Image (cartoon, rainbow, N blue to C red; front, side, top):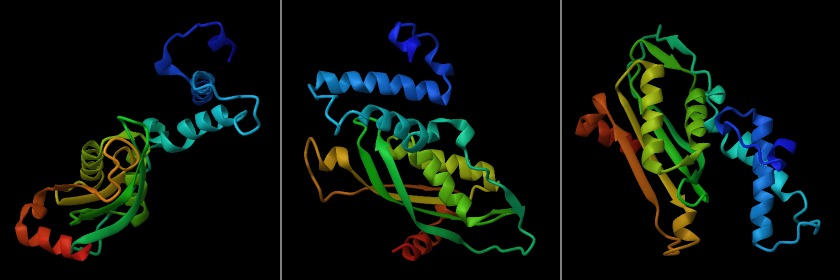
Amino acid sequence: MEKILNGIDKDLNNLSEQEKVEYIQFYFSKIMQVLELDLTDDTFEDTSRRVAEMYVNEIFSGLNDDNFPEMTAFDNSYKYSGMLIEKDITLFSYCAHHFVPIIGKAHVAYYPSEKVVGLSKINRLVQHFARRPQVQEKLTMEIADALKDSLETDDIAILIEADHLCVASRGVKDTNSTTQTSYYSGKFEKAEIRKEFLTSIE
């Protein structure tokens, strides 16, 4: 904190997690002061610290590559060849344009080749990439690329449905619209396979 107060801002790309918390706490308190909030009020006195810890340790923890989930793959010894679907995966992210929540669900499917992964790994992967400032299109592609690498297959399908609070709570203030993005590769490029996936997640 003393480094910040002295104005010695060196390489901000190589801060420890604790240093990140200290920087964000300091500067967020300045934002609150600009908004003319009384930081001596017990409602606000610890807000900047809580926000900083939340940003670094929780909602933006996906920015730290060290937090990438271990995607241990296993040999598909039982030769399962059908479609595997993990549906309704809880998704909380934050809009990269306004830093307000994106709330939705992801549906992921794949056809195993030589490798399979534990089901919870797919959930963890989705949540890892969601825990960073995002646009939904990029989030969809990041999940797809990581799954291809982990599963060693191109037979991937992803559908994300989400509500964006930047649309619902500001600007146009449309509380009814939902954003949907999708990715299909390999077998899922065939219309009948894609239809089977979409029917299964209805």
